[in-house]
Length: 96
Image 1 (cartoon, rainbow, N blue to C red):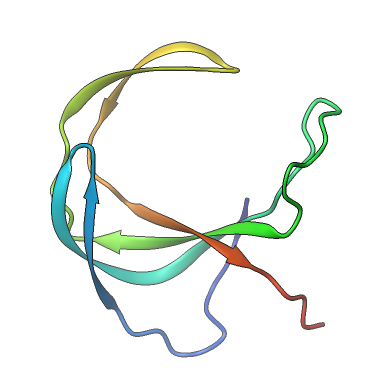
Image 2 (cartoon, rainbow, N blue to C red; image 1 turned 90 degrees about the vertical axis):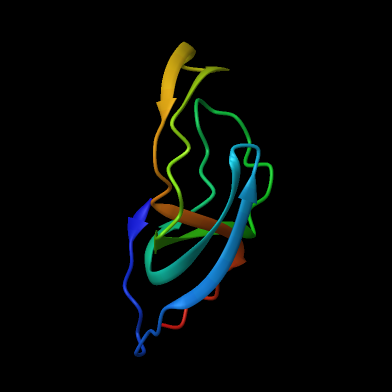
């Protein structure tokens, strides 16, 4: 994950968010991270073209839910609080 900043003036964009925890209005305030596809533990990259660009958001309602996730790092109980990022699939072109 790389920290990024906009190369042009950025204006907040209103969005409507909806997921399994509910729906709310938010504003996308600025680009924050570029997540590149990576190879991990000698496994092949499944999709080398698609990246994620994550944007800082403000305004969504906190979910305040307890969840359990199971993944390669184990079985973990987590507390879902407020959304801070909206990540969207993106294509990247290197300019320089």
